[in-house]
Image (cartoon, rainbow, N blue to C red):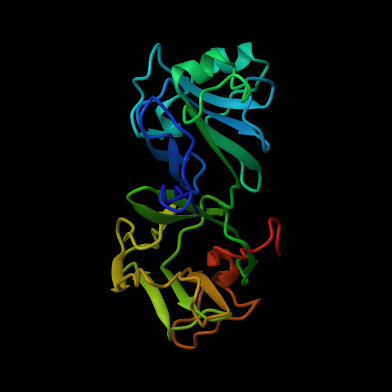
Length: 281
């Protein structure tokens, strides 16, 4: 997550700007389709470049434009891009960004866009940009006798954050799915736990949003939405699930336990200042 705060005019006087308040990027969310929020007025273009520089060139991946300054203080990438314009600059259009890549997000008033984002030709306050590396998939390790492949996606919106779980094989259905603090499955320190009642077939299917009860299941432990905090004392979290092959009478949570699957999540995923390196473990 990135928050770019404007400087106080009392301590850092801004250069004179006749157009009103300068553009100021407030936030770019961590998502495959980020949302961008700003203050300072309406703009004629919002764009995204791969890499560390805003430009109308081959690094451009997404852009939205208007004939005049009519795009107001919020844009979401899933709302659509002018792909033909991206291509005209030699760029490759993307409707979803890539985990682990660095992007530059920018805003431009009409005059800055007409100046081709050339800093030597733009008026002060008519352009703003910020660069960040997207960290969208939680780093962790799969385990359990079922040997599935889990993927947990962070999807941050201006209105809140959610975590979406997917797994392969897609046909795998769980009887139970739970999230807890700790290095392995268990029934203590639960953050969330859902269960398909007896008498019904296992039906918890991919994808699942953590904290949202899947169809056909019941919530045993309500989601503790403070479970993923950077200052937590937990070293790891684990998401675990079981099928009917799992022995309910003698529950085990080992790496080879039949009917059991887990995804060990490192808490560094939630540390804003020092997140897990891309690709770990």
